[in-house]
Image (cartoon, rainbow, N blue to C red; front, side, top):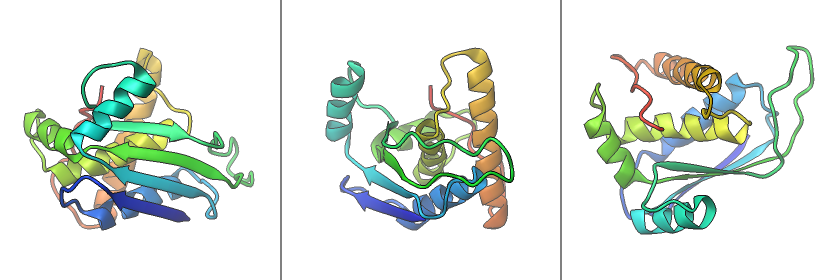
Length: 165
């Protein structure tokens, strides 16, 4: 799995954890091991510009996903997953920090960035949360992936609750 993490935000983030949880999520979703993903960490000004340009919405957001080859998890366990470019995930640590502080179960900026990384991966794989059934499926997968990764890394305590809208 080729995953690049590029921090352009000026904020110190746990890049290794972002890389590790992205790799874990892609493996868990059975994405081809030679697929490629880019994660870019930006400041609020850059995120706001992307949010306006691509979503026509004001202000910065927490995470945006830009799919390339529209890869999907294989439908059957024995199916060979396709290889390709997943796309880009853009994260904003300043928004993540505020969301972590404001969450019902307060958590760190890095924990929120880990959650948002998984959220971004799922969006790249075609998951969405516009409808209640889609939201239940996506957020259920998101929680299972984050909990699984945290368990493998010996991290205790509750996983961050989904704060993305």
